[in-house]
Length: 320
Image (cartoon, rainbow, N blue to C red):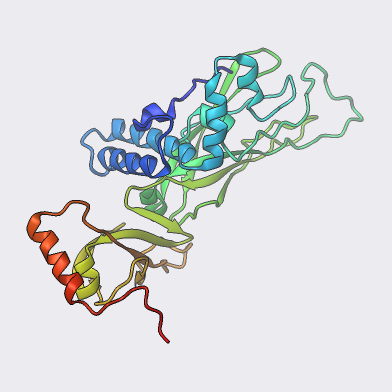
């Protein structure tokens, strides 16, 4: 089944030698622009948001990026392109997943899942009377779930495309998949009966969709907890401040205590993702990131110099 190559560097608008920090900044800028919650054309924004998430998923991971760079150099070479895939034997199915948030290109070359077929099947031979039936193998794939879906749950239409080896004709099976509230990163969602067909009258296998939380410009997750990198000024860290902070369900005012340190985590209870059916929720953590000014006016420079000359603080002096 033909697969369209994805130029992830072009999607994020970065050069091929972009640093990890450049990739992170480019993703955040585009994600904020195309997030469905803020865009006017939500359908177009959703498609673009998934595309930049996929690019970030590959380029933001050193191993996936290395593999992509090797593949991208001569992706038009059919042999090299096929060799980067899962290595299924000739005659087996190739599965393409629609509606999961990832393209066929990502699913084939970068997904942690794999098709259920591990051996060639002879569809032209009818099972003999003494031949035992066999349940079909399971199929795995990834599904991109936004944090908003993880918070509230959703129902997603997913299609599984494959080629019937008996006729060579493509087949598409479309079904509804329920994304439960509170679904965590890495959890598998089972879709019964949507895997490999059985043989000898056996039942089909199942489809397992591995949840991947879509990268968000403002939040990340740790199980049911939600984390937000909160950028603050040096004087806010030293003197303290009251700062409005976004969460998945609204703005909260957070008190920054005087003397806060870079990397310190401030917890807001029960502002994370739901935990199953209990109604309990994880927590929200604001991770403090103290930002320093990169350019100074003349008055600002004079103030920093005055602080240097009058302060008794010596960060490299060890206590005796």
